[in-house]
Image (cartoon, rainbow, N blue to C red; front, side, top):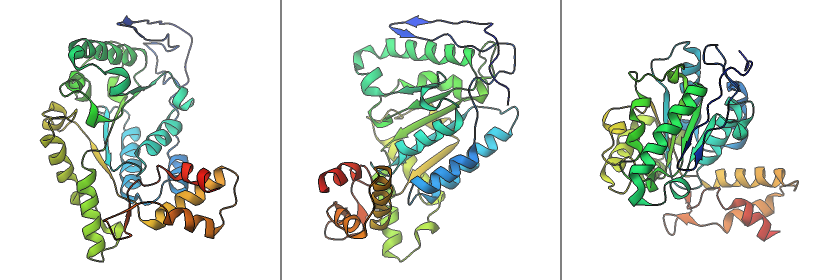
Length: 311
């Protein structure tokens, strides 16, 4: 894969305190900046560190493989993660970043947006829209192989995200770059309760977890997003225009998955994962439905702190 070349273009944009760093990539070369995808390593890392998410693994590996094997994609890759807290959405997004860019989360071509950090004041939405548009266009001009990650979409001011609609379809032109090689990732808890219900019904019917397919949850996720007036995707052209390529559902975790998380976390902390300790920690977590030990209410989110407390 091509590596970054001599500095031929320096772009600095300062818009309402947002600064675009100088990037060593030529507008007129096939420079891919530090974009160095390793999907085999991603899949292996997924298998070692993400538990109970067969759908997420299958959908993401296939979507990324198809996208990266297309020399001239017709549009950017747009992904949307949905699921209950603690099911692995943030972890998986970190794995993607680490295995797509040489410098991982430190890459200047990976851009994270948090509604609480970047868009906290609803009365400034007009200014936020302008900032966001300039930020994305400036960075895409500097490097078409960029990743834009929007966290907590369920807390994003409604209407704001539609500012980037032109960048997600096949018709927009960004001078000097192939913006269609970018990746956009949205993360949301929306649809989590509906996904949990599908998983619970499958468990009640003694249906194997791996039999749950995207078609079983995709429409209910969309309906959940569209019907929520406080969600960043509410009444959004991104949804109505079918600009999301892959909806990725994250299923609630079973006690066995939580135990895998505990063992994995203990190993990372240099602690021998003795089974009686693993079992004790798992049994002290909260599960639902109430009175039934079926799914973890917090997934693996509190595992690290529980281990520290227990030990």
